[in-house]
Image 1: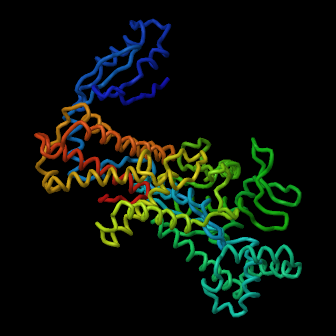
Image 2: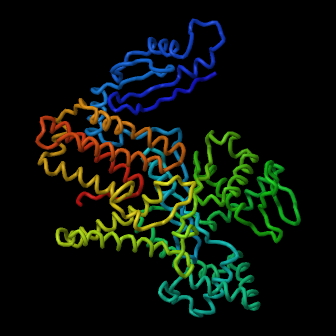
Image 3: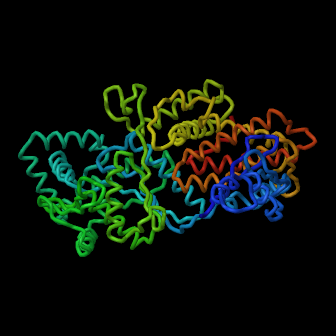
Length: 560
């Protein structure tokens, strides 16, 4: 039986140790067998005697029911941090067992504006992509936009009706995309003649009619321009490969699944029956058309075979869990994926909960409309700027500095308020809470970082010279505690990637800030005998905080 080592950071600040409970695990295996051991403490002592010498270790002991406590060497900890300061934080990046991954996120529908419902997918996906990229994984950031389907028939016909000269149609002429979509849908539902035209338009579009393809492209381009405004604000990069991209491959993929005996006829449709599900996975509709499942299976086939991805991560709301479970199972049945869901090539559905309003229901405007993401971000920036002006920063800073800080803090507050929650749960959207400078908020953390930068500036020391000539010493408990927390950065990123849970990094960042506050409240930095060492500790903390901000898609601020 394999024993998995469990290492825990000691809560005892005076020791700053790590401890292993392997002795208890081993005892459960050998208990009742003829050995010289009488219990976990004896096993712990045996482990202790057989530990190899290491520069990392200052001392070891066995405590309580058999915990092996290891006190890390202050010199080793300090040297590790010094090396990072000289060689860069990229040297602390974990190494993952994959070289190429696809992160499928955001994925809005063409002709519909991005709303608060797209917020979570966009920023969770971006954060996961950033962490994988930092861990030396090539990430294909995919925007699987909804740019195909029966709704385009009504949109195109409505476009023709409203703008006979489609060549001159602009984003300004169409105006609000959401309104345009609703108007076309209303006409589709109430006008039988228009509905018939729309249905024929779908056939023409899918048949490759040049005029209809041109109108479709026009609608898609106008939508993309709207999406770009949101992505620019959020500083999110994506490569679009929408549903239409996979159309040429669908028939081939369906044929492959059929040749493997997976597809059966059911009530006129073609389906795959899967064990454990009371409904089959439909891959071809009764009218011969394709659906989400056929497109998603084809996209998966393409990503595995053409893009050679080893890990494919889908970021959508938890409501789509069954769909993903079913088509993942179909892919395993086809032999595309291994039976174990932890073996590569691997697929994961990163599900997330709702964004709720103060009333506990889905977040909407007072008129029950979904909240446009552009409006929400603009509001966050406006509120942030107002708070800065109230503190008199408009008189201290240039207009550019004020605007940039308001944007960094406002957008960062929205992102962090989302990411700090376990993604599988819902959370309540509240501007006042997320823009507070107290507690676990982006504002508090950004200001904490700015304060550290201010201390370093006030010292008058050149940071590069300090890194080359200064020596870090971790003699005091608070210094050791902060140093140990800094050294946990790599394992935190690795755990966040492995479990696809961004809130783990948020917890680390907040705890780092708290650890620094404890250190700074006890120890003088500027003017102390240990000034050089403590400035290095300040610099290391600021560097790790900035890397956390980067991974969370938050722009740091340097002045408060």
